[in-house]
Length: 282
Image 1 (spheres, rainbow, N blue to C red):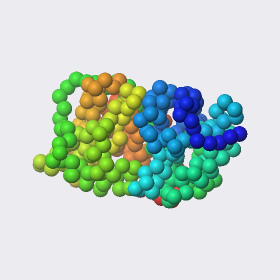
Image 2 (tube, rainbow, N blue to C red; image 1 turned 30 degrees about the vertical axis):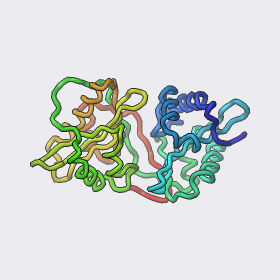
Image 3 (cartoon, one colour; image 1 turned 120 degrees about the vertical axis):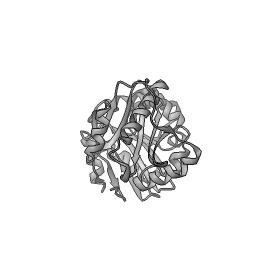
C-alpha cells in the first residue's frame, strides 16, 4: 500500500471516492459534501488542499484519502477524513499526514458522524478528546417570499458584528474580522434601540445548497424573536439566490437553538462528534 500526495490528475477519482464514502453514515465526516462534482469544484477552489491531500492506493485502486485544512495564524489543523477501507489504513494516513503537515501545529480537530466508529477509534488512540456533539439540521423547503425584518450588513456595522462574534464564539474556526471580510459570506443584522444585537452568517455552497455558519444574539436581547427573524431572512435570501435547501450545525446541548431551527422547518439529518487534540471549546 502506497501513501503519498495526490496528483491533480487524480482529483476526479479522489472526489468520486470521497463522495461515495460520505453517503455512508459509518464513514461520514463533517466539512465535506457528498456530491463528486461539488467536491471536485472545492478541490479547484481550495488551493491549500492541493499540497495537503494524501491518498492511500494499491496500484490504481484508491484505499483511503485524508485532507488537511490548516489555519497557520490559529496554529490549528482540521483533518477531513480519513476515509479508508480499513482502520489500519486510516491510522497510517493520519500518522503520515501529521508527520508531513501537522507537526508544526499544536491544535488538531476531526469531526466524524457519531456512527463513524473508525475515525472515532483512530482519534481516541492518538489522544484526541471528544467534545460536545452537534446536530446537523437541514431545511428542504426554502421560501423566497415575504419581506425581511432584518438588514444586510453595512460597512458601519462591520466592527460591531466582528466584536459581537468574538464575544459569542471565542476560539472558533473563523474570527470576527475574518467573518465580516469573507467575500462569499452573507451577513444580516438585527438591532435593538439602534444597536447591533444579533447577526447571521450564511452562504451558497458550490453544490448550490445554502449553509448557515453562525447565528449570534446578544444575551440581553434574547427571547425577542431576533434569532428567528435572522434565520427566516437568511433562508429567504438563499432561496432568492437559487438555493433549494439549507443546512447548518448546532450544538446538541443547546435545546433552545435546536428548537428555534426546527420551528422554521429544519430537521435533524445526523449528529457529529468533534474530536480535538491540544485544545478544547466550551
